[in-house]
Image (cartoon, rainbow, N blue to C red; front, side, top):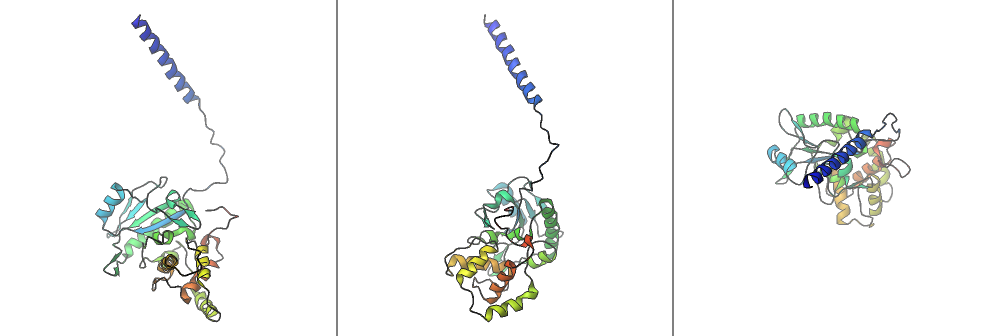
Length: 277
């Protein structure tokens, strides 16, 4: 009797298993028609510095509760580690916002550069070979995901209240000259400065509005409070690294105005009627 029951259970199990295999094998997905309206899930590239050397950075980014897609060393020649596949989320941006989009880990590629950052009041330089290698990598990643120039940013741009990397020595202008990221029309700077000086200088609310238009998460208090100054300083580190004290002087305001008047749609945050990112 026990043997008969055992055989019966075995037969039932085989029937269920074969049925499951048959169902799975019968599933057919037709991929011959592809939607026209689609794009990469990746919309941003976020650049960081490690604040450490390569061995420490590798351990931190591969064994701790933080990661990035790429690590670009400061060796000669420069070496690139890929630590996370581009189709997966790396944990590099944290609480962040850019052009109205928040928590950017889900839609960004994070690139860490080996650089010690600020030590004893001095900022470490970025070696020329490291930047040349980075530019090549950025061209490849940008082409793969059709990254808009406005969306190539630093950690300080997307998290101005808590981050300062990649710092004022990072060569944003050099990247822009190589076709990566956004820069302002320097030929227009003198005229815009003259225009602003001939009128009453814009107030704090104007500065906050312009910073928000440029992509930054900015308070809307109408006063130059500490949080707003943090955002101004982040903007200055990116576009005016000679002075990043957080005070919106005429040159800073002029650069803001030029950026926000750019005619290239890839250099501006998208409006509400377009694909959001």
